[in-house]
Length: 459
Image (cartoon, rainbow, N blue to C red; front, side, top):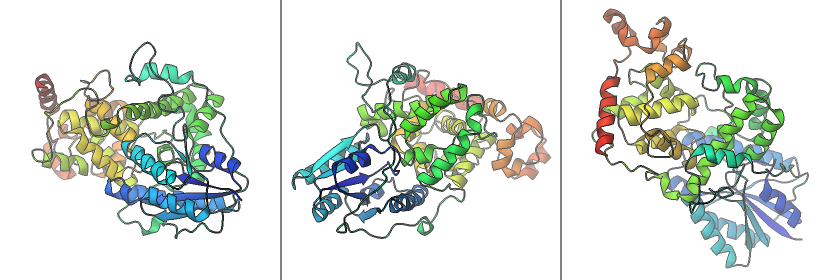
């Protein structure tokens, strides 16, 4: 009997899973393996919201495997050590896994290859598992550049790449009796999670996808920035954990057709764009990608402003609404992410890394690739071709939440403020403001803009 190990990482699904598909074809028995790596916690990636969502994903993956005669094997410890041990115990000849793009993933793959080489086990790394188009699959022609630094030309080339056919889930998975594992983690055992956290797992993700596909997809182009309408797919957590396949989503959207589907595909492409940037420049997870700037305010000289921003108490309602949604749901509307990030970096002039870290502590879809590079895009140190743009929270609030519904939903202190003044409560009569129990603006927007321009001039 031949045996192969499939190491699940950020690809917790059975549909369209190239490593699993290859292993099933290559071996008689399969060990579906997930390793709870203490290095993830040490690196600060193991936030409670993601830990709970991960537990749901693993439980669901185990159930789906059991329906096919298999089971998920869970081990704890350094990945290379545990995979080597499982391969030796089960006499596996091969290990299959999805490629990663972060420096953390590269180190993990290198250590794993070294450990497996020492016992004569072959490691197979599969591309286009966590992205629709593999990083590095398209590069600028006629230049020495190894990646695209601007989204629009990347999107044009990306759109021309033929996608592989999505792979069906295996019908049967036979797991050797020698594969030993531990009990599955439970989301119920995770403390300090957001109360509105969604359910994790491929089953929940596919249910969410089907529901959204039949309703909001058609109006996605026109309403994906509508804060109150909440017409976004909310599929990002499932994509982050690989409970859904980006290849399958893109092909399905293209088959559906229409402006909404096209707009959705463009958003998936943004995700791939960031993956190819970080694959080429792993240091961009912490270092300024394009425009170095050393004038940021940090924790020492902006502590009160940072705390007010984190708590949703800046005095700018749409910013505070976004920050409170983040704390309650472990998720935030994309337009609100842009507004809150712009306010921190360009109005308060605080280092983008401070904001990125706070998001990673709460976002269920938070990953190094998209979180860090989106923060850099907003802060003007990344791939934005207009790095000096500043989003005005009042203008943006009136445009994307014209009735104030989003603000009133998340900032109940302003629930009784009528009309568009909900975005400018400081214009209310003094006695009315005093009764709201809502803070005055942390900073005048004009003062913040002046400071930003002056500091960038020095930078």
